[in-house]
Length: 86
Image (tube, rainbow, N blue to C red):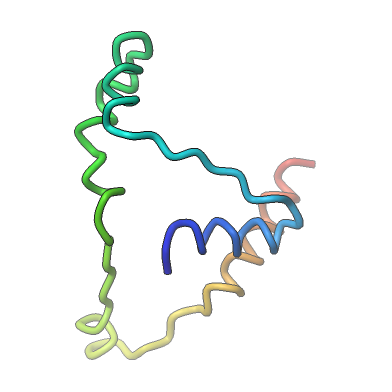
């Protein structure tokens, strides 16, 4: 699942419009001149420029495949956040 699809799923469950911004390397290099935390972000951009694949097959082979469905976990998290924000 892409980051955008994840954001859209979470926003749908929360009942809000998804909102995200994409920045280029050039924009981040420019931003780091004025925003100190942006200096560190440029080093981590590789994480967002290529697919980040998570494979739990080794875990599932030992402990079984008992992952919570994403929709269920997002719903639980959104509900928890709403309760926390009260």
